[in-house]
Image (tube, rainbow, N blue to C red):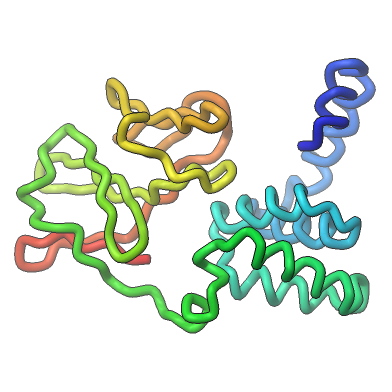
Length: 208
């Protein structure tokens, strides 16, 4: 949200509250991914770079792939025109998100080794960096849960030092998550992204 909107929300809370309520309820029948994709298109139409960056990250966090975001922009060509789409791609390139690199666009999800399952202690969480990605692994008896380390708010990679007492707090805007369930308990409304995982010959694997 821009500084101007934040200011207006504080200066005229009743009037602006109706505006934000309208935005929320207008897309109430849409799933979060679709809402985020539409928001990306509206920010491109108005050429608001900050908004594009915000909603591209939100769309990724809500399950959209980079290819889906690019397709949404191209499908909106009749409304946006080529110039705005090129402008939006320049914004994406400036963000330098790994999902939009050419090699990533062509890649299929694959399984990555996180290490021996025995190295993850029950009831504790560990941050693992693997093949250019970082994840949190939470161990439980005979079960492991793997989360993307990036906050679903603005894709900030959360460090292990942010974990305290079973809760993980993003250092950027304070979104706080229960590491056991991944649910957001403070500051936001979306959980950590859980990644598919499996055990193979005693080694924990995760897919991304």
